[in-house]
Figure 1 (cartoon, rainbow, N blue to C red):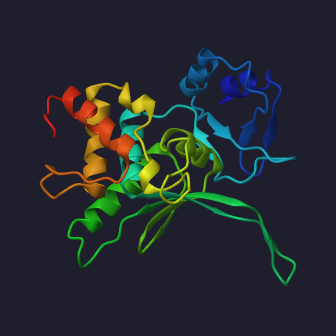
Figure 2 (cartoon, one colour; figure 1 turned 90 degrees about the horizontal axis):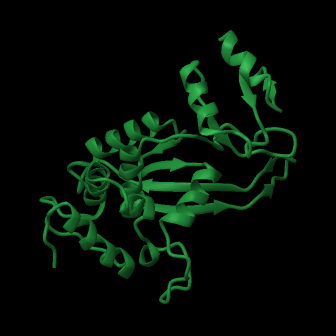
Length: 231
């Protein structure tokens, strides 16, 4: 990609041979046109979490642009079956160190008691792969160790006030629909609701239960925009 390489070399960045990635630490001057041109020339621009000397792990990258329908589906799964977690740094007896880890867990198991579990798991896996988000897969669901996505979910999928019942910010009582989804078109809202109901709704998608008062107030608005009545 000689044309792409020539364009990137004009920025204040550097190339990492091991990951075959060009890093631009200062993005304040990067325009939408510049990003679109990267796509046109065959590149894949991503936001990255930088450490002192280099990007802090491949897991801390997110695509600069994300399809809103995919984002709507991801938010539906996170609000219905997701939770935020954080592992603090640790030094092991052998001297090895573990840094602080921020992660999002999406619970979805297969087998007895969850007839649609396997198909839902496949759908979540395809969704994460399609967006370009790295994850690990276990028997109980999926874990996304990505501080950038963690911060976005923290800011957009939870209220900023602690729960009156448990005192925590990240619990089922404080979940909400992100404003970017609330203001999106009907196709995005349908994608969001589809994932939401697969997680917490009834089999016939006529009943949805939530412990979040804010979410309970937002859902009728979404349903009304799609032409459904609710009570």
